[in-house]
Length: 328
Image 1 (cartoon, rainbow, N blue to C red):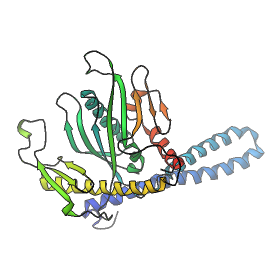
Image 2 (image 1 turned 60 degrees about the horizontal axis):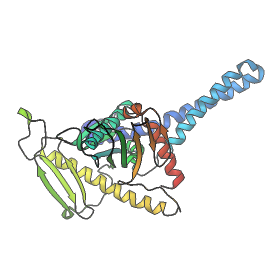
Image 3 (image 1 turned 180 degrees about the horizontal axis):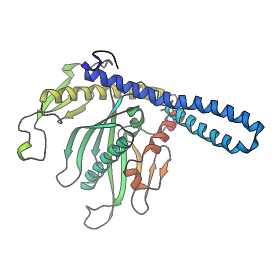
Image 4 (image 1 turned 90 degrees about the vertical axis):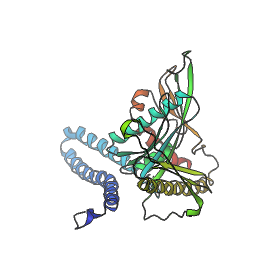
């Protein structure tokens, strides 16, 4: 990083910086574990001569166990693309306007989680609903092992609450779907035949006024063989939007290839929970009681508002452990 010309290529430089952060995520706690183990050896020798420091030994053992448990979890982030950024798209599904609002709540939840973990978030695409919430939105989350943590969020998220959009004040069930793909680097080979990709341009949506986009700068790409659709409208330049859309498409295709490999591995196990974009993976209850429960792992939290404010790490960790046990 200190080499002359390192920052001349910003995109390549950021990739290296990201790789460094991912390595530090593993190396820092590993160094702490080795240091704690050395301190523990010294304390145990002292405890043989002075029983009064037995409590210090216990505290050091507990500290070491915490570090080792954290390292064990991080060791599960060993997939091919786990160290990449995560391209996450949130879609409103069944539930009308309540589902649009629910999708917007989820967008905020993941943004809050990313902020709390010092990850960066870039909004790539957003389609607002006329009444409330969003139809869909796409963000890129960048940070150590972002994709490794977030890939388990792919699937259907179910909300049960007294809807503020229901005039009769009745309980309603709404759904939002999450799709997560790795932000693959240009150096990773993903084969896509340009003849298989349909390109559409359209006018980017906005709040209007003097800043409204008057040109067809937004870009939508459709990969015809897989019916994979991506879009980007965050830049005023059609050229930049197209470049970003192609990067998103490469990431989606890379994820499809990864899913094929995971399916082949999972086929070796007799029982496995249903996963994937259309599978219901988590339930969020606001009524009659407040709790969030993952349908795959059984992990749950009673503080629903903390979860919606971004406290989802427990769910992410539980899914990592579940994947190993279930062969996913």
